[in-house]
Every structure is written in structure tokens, then in C-alpha cells.
Length: 222
Image 1 (tube, rainbow, N blue to C red):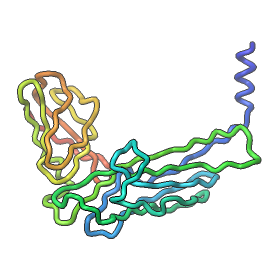
Image 2: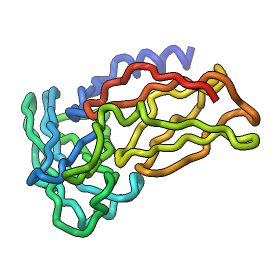
Image 3: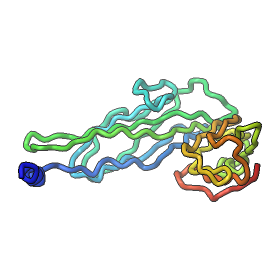
């Protein structure tokens, strides 16, 4: 009986729900010949939000990085409105022969009202990949995932990325077994794939493109 009364009380409490801020993408490409890159921030909610933005080299850091500046770093986003966060390169040295990957953090802090009680307010930090793409890199970034080379050496499987672009897997399977944690391959690098020892046969993969979409399947044998 006590449990039933508690449930009824919770159902009657006037909790305030929120739609939350929407970020206009899962990644941001900064082209080396551009003055800046921008991503939209949309507020479909009935309350304003305080938006804070910064760039880090580490996705779990809140310290910020001086190679890129997010602007405005702090602003108020009114209900049912949209703004943009712009990223500006400060000119600090970065490799010119390959992409660099950093992380753009956007934190949304909901407003509060003195007249509201029993509020359920959640601060959300969205972290997306920021790719700095120097001008003049060879090859087509949209086709980079087709250039991957898979090899088996001993009991391990390796994947090599001979291109100057980062490649983020959406899904990857080796010998019919899905890789549980898809990789993000650095440019001009090789990495071991976490599969069962001695795995071989058909390798199939799909990756995430510049727009956050999924590429077509590519297959090879090892």
C-alpha cells in the first residue's frame, strides 16, 4: 500500500521536462584554406540555455587547447532559436601532410525559474570530432576508406591506412565476427584489430563520412 501511494505521489508531481539542445552534426571538418569552420546549435525547448564551447586534444578534458578557439565561448540561446559555434585556427604548428584530430565540446546549461518547483534540469556536454584538413592533401577523403589494407600476421589482424585522412569505422567484421569497438584510424598508420586469434576469411567494413553518413560496404579477404 505504501509503495502504491509513493507511485501516485510521483505521478502527480509537476516535473519540468526539457527537449534539449541539438547540435548540427557529429563531426566538424576544418579545411586548411578556410578562415573558420562552424556548426549549428539549435534550441527547440521552451526555456533558454547557456551554451559553452571549447576545443581540446583530449575528449575527456575540460582544459581547452590554444590551437583552436571556439567562438563565442559562452552565449545565451533563446527558446526556439538557433545560433552557431565557430572554430578558428590560431596558426599554431600542425602537420601539413595529414589531418589532425581534436575534439569540440559544447555544453548546454538549462535556465531555472524561481516560480518553478520539482524541476528536472540536466546539463549536457556534447563532444564531437574536429578534423583539421590541411590544404593540398592528396587523394579524395570520400574514397579513403576504400584504400584500407588488411593483413594477418601470426595470430593478429592489422589494418593499414595509407591515406592522409582519418577513417572512422561504423562497423567492421572479420571472418563473420563483428569487432565490438570500431576504430578510428589515424592517417598513415597501422593498427591491430581486436578479433579472435587466428581470425581470417572475409573482412567487411563501413565507415562514417564527412557528413556523419554511412558509406557503402567494402569487402576483402585475408
